[in-house]
Image (cartoon, rainbow, N blue to C red):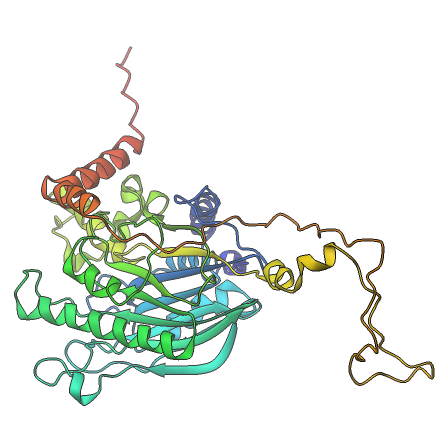
Amino acid sequence: MVWYTDLRNRRLFSEAESDWTSRRLLELRAQLASASPKGVPRRTKEASLIIGTWNIRDFDNNKFRHGPRRRESLHYIAEVLSAFDVCALQEVNEDLGPLKDVIRLMGPGWEFIATDVTTGASGNRERMCFVYDSRKVRFRNIVGEIVLPKHALLPGEQQFARTPFMVSFQAGWFKFSLCTVHIYFGETAKGSEGYARRVSEIEYIAREMAGRAERENENYILLGDFNIKNPVDETMGALTKAGFQLPPEQYPSNLLGTHYYDQIAFRTRKDELTFLSSGAFDWSQTLFRPDHYEHYAPVLPKRHRDLKPDGSPRDTGKDKEYYSRRWLTWQMSDHLPLWVELAIDFSDAHLLHNVKGAFEAGDVPAQAEFTEEAEPVAAPPEPAEPVRPLKKKRKAPKVAAPEKQGTLAPTPRLGLKEGWRIFWWVALGGGDRMRKAKEAGKKAAKPRKAAKKPDA
């Protein structure tokens, strides 16, 4: 549960600012509590596990001078992260101070594990992180960064642009290893060196994790920002051809809702992957909305705006566009957090494995555990003669209905028909129509100003 005590600290929040932030948090909590995929399922103690991934844009060194993030923004980020049991974060910068502030706001029990920064032009001195609730998710003391061996180096003897990060956890019965990535983007055109490098990075990490899952008979989950454009792109094929499964539903994860950059993919042990639900949480429906522009306009950074001498914008339309397209992405992100809910309570299945139908045809006496002198028996004694079945038969056990009902099945391969449908949907502007419809919905939600009454 997120701590809100800072909102009453008048050195940090004025009364008016505390009121504004509290209203936004109440609306954010209501959206999180909505039915999925709009919201996120309520976390359970042991029935399910919610895994998230979020590229949390340039968090938080303000090198592009659009920030830094406001105190209220840290509260919003803490509220979203607390909806997950464990979440992978990309684009965490060198200074861990802001992340520690978020962890503090999330309350006791929350921990994080981070890499060192990745150096080099493509690394941007970013870190990979995992934030997790240690009261439910246990760190299994295995952690490491994945590097390319010499024979697998990318053209120009290059390593990954940003080093993948793997950590092993356990929640209830479910043991799993998470590997988070932030794949190189480069050029968008197929055939370009940048695009080829993007595909190569995905291919290698998918093969490597699939090989480990096979050798170790372990559950591996590959998640993060793959910079995948759409479900039929070659970048998606590089991920799935290694045998990784995707949730039954796919969701765009950029703020405009046009690309499928972020993914959560699974290579697991037989019968240990049960999907319950999944989604991409669109925080922009509640936070930093277009109708909030006038509230934030006075604090937008002047260096990125065209202002008159009196401080008002020369072009209000362009100023609003800067607020809604750029500034807010450095307060929250230009990505939506992607999540998936899995069933992890295998207790009934474990017990049912021990149940033998033969004993329902005829019971047998209880096993001897002590001698007449009340000394323990080292092992069940071998009967001198065959045990005679009792007349009373054993009844089939009653099994409680599962708290969460999911889908225990591999993701079906993308068929040719469905592939062509998605291809033509994208080619004929389906993504653009979705984006325009989303923008129109936001404009429609903006309250209209009441018409002025004529003077009497």
